[in-house]
Length: 266
Image (cartoon, rainbow, N blue to C red; front, side, top):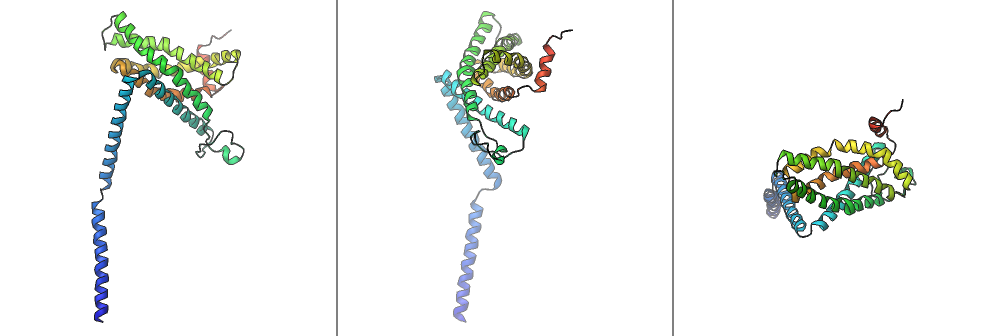
């Protein structure tokens, strides 16, 4: 009995020791609130470092940095546009498979990223948006500030830049996008002309409700060296819209917008 009692006491002590060690280990772990705070701080530090690296690259290699960032933004925007279009037709599962794999009923329900289309949009961001935007904002500031002698940060300066951006760059950008997408999809000259006739005005009207507000803040408060970066952030939204818009074909709302500016013959 004495031996058994001793063995039992040893086992009981060992169990208590394990419980004590487990409690000490749990107490040493951070609380849920502390863990969340740590993650937030870590993300903030990472973002601050990424922002510093981006500004350094922008100062050293401005055009190349804008080309890379614009291509990534437009490519990502097209992926989201494809997903939005897919969700309009079905509530389906998400898979990154090639669009050619659509044979079975199951695969027809899956969201399949069209990587050729993604690369097409990414190339537009790199080949047109980045170099044209880089040149435009620097030239616009030089002409409006120096040639027109408008005071920096004034309402007149902002209004002049906004008018030029809306009436010059807006139509040029939209015309280039629609023409490029027509060529990329294999359309001939007559088909591209017809597409521009149907799509240009509805797209310009729709974008006219978005970009002037964005650019008014841009020209009023954002330094010139960061204006293209600011615009690139909103270009993600714009790339989603334009990519989605391009593949709406003969949607009724496009016909309605076009009818608003089309002369009605008696």
